[in-house]
Length: 141
Image (cartoon, rainbow, N blue to C red; front, side):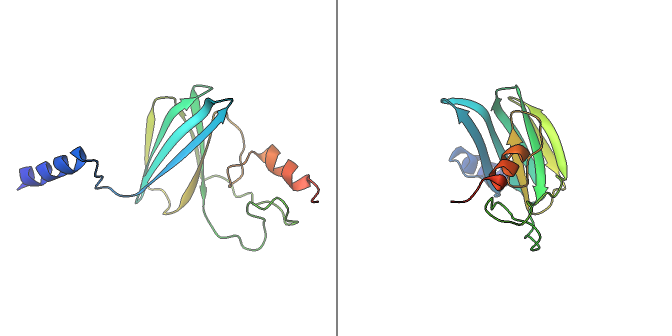
C-alpha cells in the first residue's frame, strides 16, 4: 500500500502538483536591473523555508514580525498619519547565505518576513527605520 501511495505522490510531483499546500512569498529588490536581494519564503502550517536566492552582500538578513491588528496606538504603514509608527520588535532575526535554505518550525500562524541584503533595523512593514521616519516627517501637500 505504501508503494502505491508513494507512486501517486511521485506522479503528482511529476506534473507539478504540490501536496503540501501553503504560501510562497517572493521578496526581490533590484537597482538598475541588478538583483540586490532575491528571496523566497515557503510557509505551511507551523513550518517555513527561507531561501536566499541571491544577495549583493552574499547574505540575506531576515527579520520576522507577528502580524497583529493595530490597537489604535500606531500608524501601520501610513506615513501621513500623526500617530507614532508601529515598532513591535521582531520575534526572530537570522542570516542565510546566498544559495542556501533555512528551515524553521514552531512559527506563529501568521507572521511577516522582511529580508534585506544588509543588516539593520526595519519596521514591521519591512521599511527601513530611517526611511519610515523620513516619510513621517515629510509635509503633506
